[in-house]
Image (cartoon, rainbow, N blue to C red; front, top):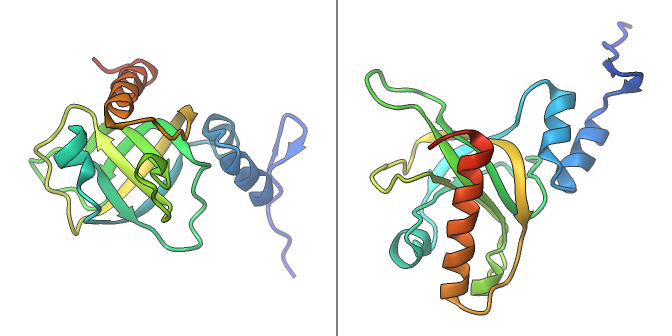
Length: 168
């Protein structure tokens, strides 16, 4: 029998259980330290309710993830949206504001991962395999009184994502 590689950082053993616990708490920054890279989920981009594009002004890429995917706790995150199969001559990576949760303002029940490529409303990503890399948690999930309050919060979230990611 071959022993596995034991990973130790600053005297602490790194385990998948520990990484998953950090992700459940939404601490993607600490998980990234242990992983040596940002936590990534990937899947095909599918149609959602289209509220982001049609109602809110923030079109999102909705990722269809495998049920066993380790998804961070509900909230809003800064990160990156990337094509897994880049096309020569086309952009393949965008800074993103990422929402994880049930969309409680709309009484949602299904947990989703949606990424808004900052300042982009021209991307056609349906059917493409994409990756979402989580860099930092911006805030927890909230239910807003109305759509206007949600839009104000989303604008604030996007500004904070720009700041965290160091993009203009």
